[in-house]
Structure formats: structure tokens, C-alpha cells
Length: 220
Image (tube, rainbow, N blue to C red; front, side, top):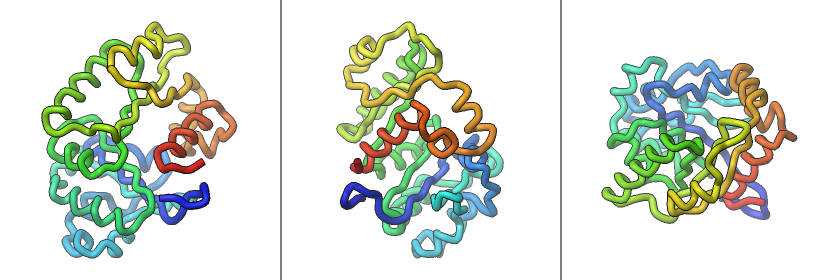
């Protein structure tokens, strides 16, 4: 939500890649608890204000809800749990960002159903596009994500064989944004735990990410 062209209120990031999520690592955080502990707290699931105690605060002010510490712990989180968590988060934060991971199951479908905007970021290569098309077919069968979908090309190589127009023709959809190939900037961000938009704010990668965020939340 926004007003006057500026973002208002708290922002939260939920790391819901429940097996291999590394959001906390990428932000150089050492979380005291994870979404597993949050989902075990039945009171926090019904009283959203208690949810705040499970967030780790980043220096930017972002509230981060970390992924499970071990891949086997992700099984303890159910689709019903996530539904309650996300509905509670809506009442606490102005903007909620979710890393939904890459595993399609009932929990992922719950996340997609609750979302106002869905971003698919993918490499412009045949295997990735084929996988994305398969995913879109499944989502269409179960109700789809419709007009709330944003497609983003993440350039893995300096020179891609597939042109953006070719990708759009294959998907039958417009590519909203392209993230530029900047391996040094991205590797530095990952290894140092400093997001691109803070560590290299004037880089083309940071500028592209800022424009994407502005479009998704409706700010300028």
C-alpha cells in the first residue's frame, strides 16, 4: 500500500522455501526462530501481534521470517498453517514479500492463492521456459494466477541465444522486466550478505530491482 508516491509502514519477508531457503544467509542474519516455531505457536497463528516476536529485524527495518534450519523440518509446516500465517501478516504489514521456493505442492498453491502479485523470475533458456510452461498449465487447471502474474527474465549469461521477443512468443505473455547479467555484483551480494540495492545501489541490477519493486507495490 502506498501514498504520495512513498511506501508506508512495515515490510516483511517470509522465507517459505521450506527445504533450502537461504534468505537469512543472503541478509547476513542469524535468526533465533523460524517459520517452524511460528507455526507451532497456535496463539501466534490466531493473534497476529504475537507474530512479530518471530521476526528477525534487518538493518533496513525489514522483518524477516526465516526458513527452517534443516530441510526435514519443513514437513512440519502445513498448508493450513501458511494460510493462517499469511492472513495474519496482511493485518500487520503494509507489504509482505514471499519466497515460495521451487516445489509445487498444496502449501505453494496456498501461497499463490493468497498473493496479490505473483512474480516468476526465470532464465531465458529452453529448459527453464519449458518448466515454466508446465507450471502455468498446472496453475490453469487449479484456478490459475491470472492477471496478477509478472514475468521477469533473469539473465544468467552475458549474451543470451533467445531474444526477449522469442520468449514472449513462446509464453504468450509480456516480459515485464529484465534483470541484467552482473555476476560480480550478485556474487558479492550473496557472499557478503548485503542486498544488491544496498551494496551496489547505482548498478544496473539494483536499478532494475528497484523498478520492479515500485511496479509491484504501485510506487514511483
